[in-house]
Image 1 (cartoon, rainbow, N blue to C red):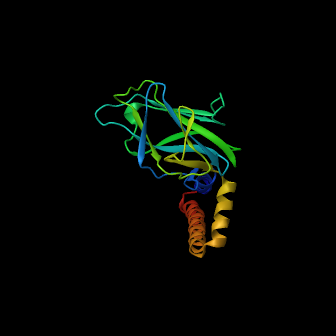
Image 2 (image 1 turned 90 degrees about the vertical axis):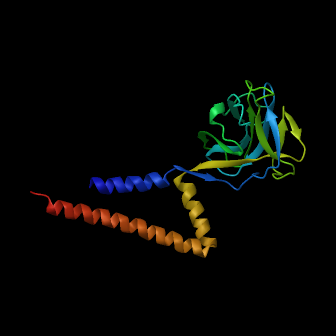
Image 3 (image 1 turned 90 degrees about the horizontal axis):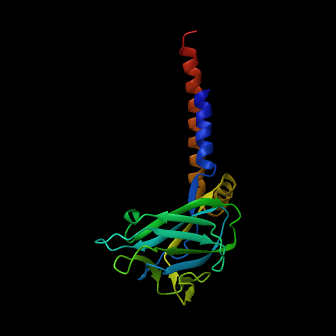
Length: 216
């Protein structure tokens, strides 16, 4: 029976809140770079579409010849909020150049339909080794705006992507919604369920056979 319990636990683990899912992409386009160093900060406001917000990816840039100091990510309820909902630090040596860098934090259960603001700073970096933040030169995300040192950058947005830590209820709702509107996905989902069921049956049968063969 241990194998049966392990199989059930494994399936529950896969479905029970360990899946990080990207929301509809707010703004991943980018064609300009703004550098931060010293007291200079850059940020973005946005609205989260679902509960359990737990990750934001931002496209960063560094000069290969000179590694910057760490980047500090702060998430707030709003631009004016004093309290940080989350703070994440990435060391300069771990910043990946010209790709999306990940900032993960504890899931926020009531994040659905709420507005948030995040900012990035690198106080120990200098003009010679700054951290670059990618932005779009057009208003790619009308529901929010980019900010430089607290001032809105008209018609610009950071290149960023939000994620949620999807729980079982969200996973079921998303799957059912997709099944109702997407026939190819429906077939795939039914096939996946049959495979999972077949695996469970195999585990049960295997466990029974092993018991029969074991010496009494």
